[in-house]
Length: 276
Image (cartoon, rainbow, N blue to C red; front, side, top):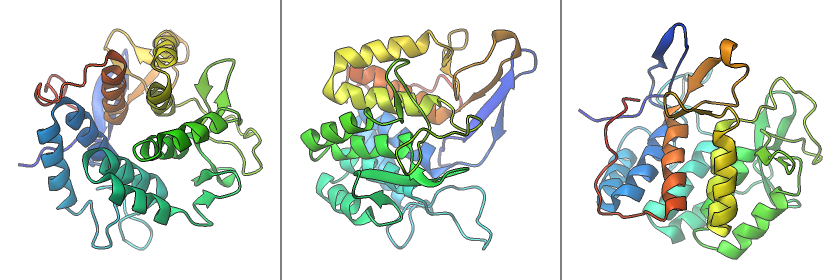
């Protein structure tokens, strides 16, 4: 039986925790490949080959967005975010030159703002606009084949409203006009954006990245009792409703390994101590 990562689980301190989404999304499978590769190169490469042989990878050499909900036409969803996840994995685990070609081919008027050199996603209230997650994925992928250009793009992102320099936090998105989003209901500081940001920072400045990670752990993003990352910064402790994504835990594993300098690829696969 093929082992797959589930989407997420949630609950509260009173009700306990349970898996609430059973479908196995593409992005969490790709994150799993990365985490396993960093712990055991051969095992990660084998898992990647296996994943590319499944329905997650289409005949058009694109990654389908999930193993769950279909679009309104009854077809699997293919989106920019998932393609960038796939390119990042290809760059690290597969062929970096192939990844670079895919990366450049992905740029288009609906997906990339050539003027600002930013990836453009679809937001709930601001339409097509730059998002932290897709741009940080882009930086991480680009760093595999042009580190100096990737750092320039990363520092440019930090000069936009995506980055809060006082709080050291990534906002979810900004407007196409490079202004902060005015809809506070959706412009949340998601943990995934923060972890991707720490990972990106670690490529260029490990000391600074360690500081950012330490700050996150003290500010409600991390559940010390369960040793798991929450989906976003927690509200008041007595009212918190937890939503914890395996994908975030996998990125946290990668970040910790990067910062510890402990990328021993012969140590074995990810220990199966948590059942996500």
